[in-house]
Length: 277
Ligand SMILES: Cc1cc2nc3c(=O)[nH]c(=O)nc-3n(C[C@H](O)[C@H](O)[C@H](O)COP(=O)(O)OP(=O)(O)OC[C@H]3O[C@@H](n4cnc5c(N)ncnc54)[C@H](O)[C@@H]3O)c2cc1C
Picture 1 (cartoon, rainbow, N blue to C red):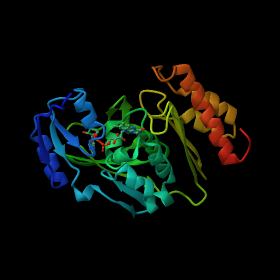
Picture 2: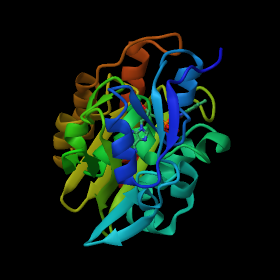
Picture 3: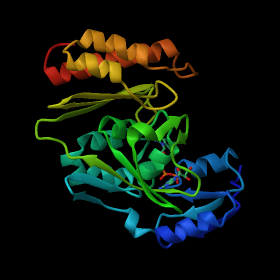
Picture 4: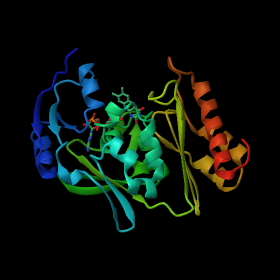
């Protein structure tokens, strides 16, 4: 099937994009890498949108360290994240995640801002930003707003982003020298969406654990984090299995996804502690 758009305009800067969205009578839709949106349009899951192409806006690109935080522009592509030295040093969880996303062709065009705004519950980057305690920066007709990742993901493909608003950047705390980051997932084939996945961050202050592909949105596993901080890995696995809310589909049953999440956590903790799983 062919995609059916209600128009197209390329924005030259963020204000131009906001003006184009405001003038589209509620039908404006941001186009970034197009790797999810164009696929949805081709399947006619999305029709009649006025596409506002932000892909050439230079201000939305780039990775920098500012005021003790790592800043990643919304248009930073998955392939750039995979190889960026600042990200490898300060947020290696994202470097690991990028290698799991789809295939090179998709990673060459897909953007981190698009992945967060799209909010696929099986996607890696939303869960990473949750585990890292990230902040999502947005700009709309009423100005700018900073949304903690914990408040951003609402439901399947649903976020706190309002219509006419653009996600501009993500900022993250810089990893401490002794911090450990692990992303572990199980997929049927390399490049497929995960059947279940986990992001684990071990900081001096404690553990942070998020899970993806095991519920309607990425989950910060608070009860499991508490058990990990208490040194109770078996309890953490039980807590995680109780916290997640997977559904069954043609790929895997809910029970199998729940089982997998526990296995991934046991193995990830074995890697971190050096104890056998
Ligand atoms: C075959 C295939 C396999 C894939 N496998 C994986 C995978 O394993 N893991 C994974 O995480 N992803 C996967 N993806 C999705 C891919 O990572 C997408 O690139 C990503 O989810 C969306 O990024 P994009 O820049 O292409 O966004 P687009 O497709 O351009 O946009 C997606 C949505 O986000 C909105 N949007 C985009 N940018 C912004 C912004 N800055 N502000 C506000 N709204 C915005 C758009 O309006 C649209 O609703 C796969 C995609 C394909 C086609």
